[in-house]
Each structure stands twice: as structure tokens, then as C-alpha cells.
Length: 380
Image (cartoon, rainbow, N blue to C red):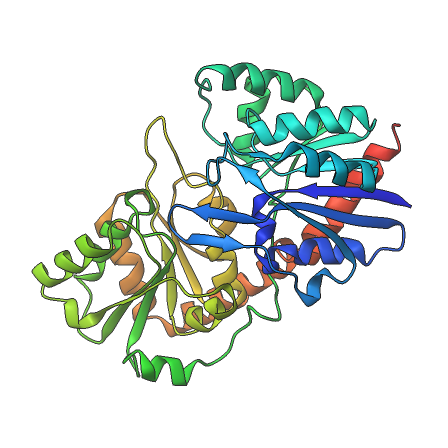
């Protein structure tokens, strides 16, 4: 029996733990999870770990943390962390924290003391020198790793350039539940939102500059009157976008829906005729690292439109439309094309769902993760 310990704040959301549940179904794995008791997200607010039916085969250890909400600077309370690790006695420790983080430092030391294999996960797809002590932590932690999982192909290149020479696999850390995210008619919700028979362009996520929300609003303003724009999410740009919609005289055709629980995301995606992720790269700071909402929308059979920022073309593949980031007219053309081509929407719907089933379900990701464990343990 191989004892696997997962560590990461993304698992505070029950939906994200489905990958772990898939792994726990294997008779030769014992799966444990260390997770913060609470997590403060800058856009989505406070999360609190709650046990769920999905945790039946997972040994969970919610632990208090210091510096809550700071991805690189937060750390687990040492005594309960040490007690949990000693109780689990892992053979593999998979820490889904960025190299250079204090949490990875803690778990790396404890993995070494337990003589466990150490795996880290990163989304970072920009090659820049970490500030201050984080640069040295990153170099040290990379030297400890037995395997590095990266969320996109650019990230693999970044860490090769940083000097990491160990094995790497491109594999997102969370997937999509194809039963929850499936094509369904959301007629009641469309009616409640006042969408009725209109062509609905949608966005779901953080309303922040790097997500390109302002570009989407300007492109949408050039669409005919039978089109409606649905924003689902919170963020700093919410009021600014509403004011822009008023200036453009389209406020009656734009709906702002605050962030909804994970359990309701699929229903809102199914209200849309297309989902747009118009992300914009911030030079030296950020570019799109994956875009889980794209995979969720494609699983629902919703046509996906994305900019060419970062990993978006990698996620969409040939199952959606891509436009140059920041090009409002090109985005407008994509939307008009979808509006007037129901046969294209049907084609992209089928391709998108098939692409998710082949690559992005929790089961797919769990299967690839298990293969990595087999590879690691073959070289003990």
C-alpha cells in the first residue's frame, strides 16, 4: 500500500477533491490531505474547509495557517503539521504550492525526514527572478524535488531555464466533473435573468483588468440588439464595467451576477451560447495559466472563445475560437461569427465536450497522476 499525502489550499473546495477521490478508489493507494482550515481569497472571499461525502476514502487534516491568503508567504502551524505527517507516514508527498513558497519549504523538510518522494506543482509561466529570499528558497526547493508537475507547457520551459533537471509532466492540478458540467437547458434560470431567446455571450471569473473584461464589453457593444452579455463573478472592475455599459448605451443588455457557489457554476454556464475568456498578458507580471472555466464551459457544450494569452490556446485546441489578445475587433468578429452560425456552435459544442472528456476530467488527471507515482516508485 502506497501512502500519498496531498497538500494544497485549492482542496479547501470540495469539488477540487474529486481527483483525490478517484485516486483513493485504487486498492494500492492510501490518500491523505493536509489543507488550511480557512483560506482568504482576494476576489472570492473567505473559504472554510468542510467535510463532504466525497472525502469518505480520504484522510483529511485541516490545519491552521499563518499569513492567510498570501500564496508564497503563508505557512502551516508547525506542531499540528508535524503531528499529521508523522501519523500519515507518507511514501509520496505532493505539495501543490509554487517553488519559492514557505509551505513547500515546510513540507519539503518533513518529506525529507520521512524519506518520502517529493512532488511540487506550479502554474508559473513567466520566467523572472523571484524577489529577495524567495529566489534562494526556489532554488533550494527545486533541488529537493523528485518530480515537478506544471499546469501548462510554458511553465515546463520556465523551470528548465531556471535550472531544474528532474522529471516534469504537464498536468493541471484539478479537473472537471463531466456529470455536473454537462449540456443541459437552463430555461428557468435564463428566464429569471431576463435572457429568454437572446444570444448570450458569457464571462465567468474575476472581474479584473488581466482577464480582459473591458475588451469583452467593447466588443459586445458592437453586436446586434438580440444579444445579451452575462458577467458571473466579482472583482475590482465591477462598477467600472457597469459605468462603461451605461456610456455605451448597452446597460439593458448586460447582466452582472455576483460570484455563485461552485455547485451552481454549471447552471450559469448552460445559460450561455458562448463563453469568452479574453485574458490580457501583464508584461513581467502575469499571463493566463490555464483557465479552468474554459474546460468547464466546453464540458457543458458551450462554445469557447479565448484570447491567445498564455495557456488559453493550449486548453481550447481546435474546439473553439482564438483571437489576438487585446484585439477588440477580432473578438467582435468571433462573436458575430458564432451568432450567425448555429452549425459552427454545434460543431464546437461536440468538439469541446470530447476534448474535456479526453483530457480534463478528474478521472483523466487522476490516471496520469497514478502513472507518475508508478514511475517514481519504480526508481526507489
